[in-house]
Length: 473
Image: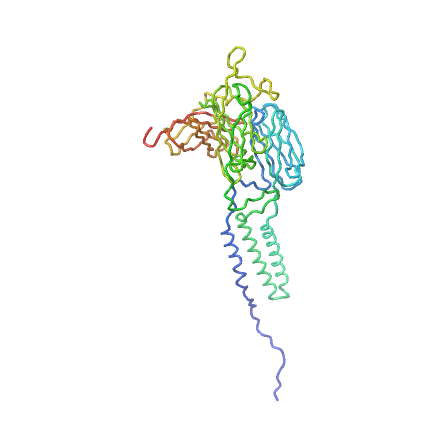
């Protein structure tokens, strides 16, 4: 009789073969990459990022100021307001009031500009919530009400995907490795799942610059697509008094209304660090001012001026309205003669804040450039209409950005019907020249003014350019 042995036998060990992950999981990262690559990148033109600084130039009380409202990352919080002045700097007290246009809640601060000191001057005002505000800048003779929208960043859902994905991937991978001694399929599945989650999080992190930003707290309502933009504004220039006299201070007013409804326009976009760039020139071009009028209220801008000579003056205002792009508004006004008791032209008297005759620091025009300054170098020497012309302006001292640019070139034709404005090519702070490239639209003689800031002083270099035609002179 044969006895069968029931002794268990050891089977040969085989390598553990885990089932491959489902194909949809393998395709998920690829699909995510494809979607994000095709997703349109957010537009950045005139978008004020949450927490970013707001800079606005103002010509107020005879001084050229740049007012900077530092961004905040939360509310309530103090907001720092900086004021930088350009020479000549007057001795000037400035009162600041930050007011929420939704609640009316306001806080105040004050600074005092010291004669000859450019600053920056700093003050702190409290903001209690995100959203639209007004910053009132008041001097003894003038006030300006600047629109300020306080934006507070919010957490992006993509950040949650990135941080949450890496956190979950780490837990799954570590957990799978720690349980490897008690389970065969469990740890492998956990490691694979963790790797997959990590790949997704890494993909989102790499492509995060192309992802749409979340709407910050306090942002303005977005216009419905397909609206066609807003109508162009209509601008009208006037003076107070209606017939300003040479040598006497007067106020130039700019009234802006909607081209369709006729209502005051109150949606100007800050353009090159200003709500409006105003250029005032005499008909012959001997008088030139590049100004940034104060905002008195919705649709009304103003600036105080003084013209040394009677005659016809031209006004050109560059502005930009939300949804309508850039626009140039033009006008004219007349300055009459003023004779003193001796019968000679008095070009020194000005009207002070009380309306009596006094003397202020408002200049009648730019200072004459030093005779030692080299004449601009123009290439080609004989510019041709419709072709680029490069103008190199020699500088001295330490260059500073002004209105967000290293330099500005303003060009006007003789008649005053055309005005062009271009910026200098980027240049290092120690550069000795600025280069401007401009294409003149038609043959003729053009008046040009190059401007840059050196050691907190705005320098103006006037010159003329004669432009010929193709194949002619």
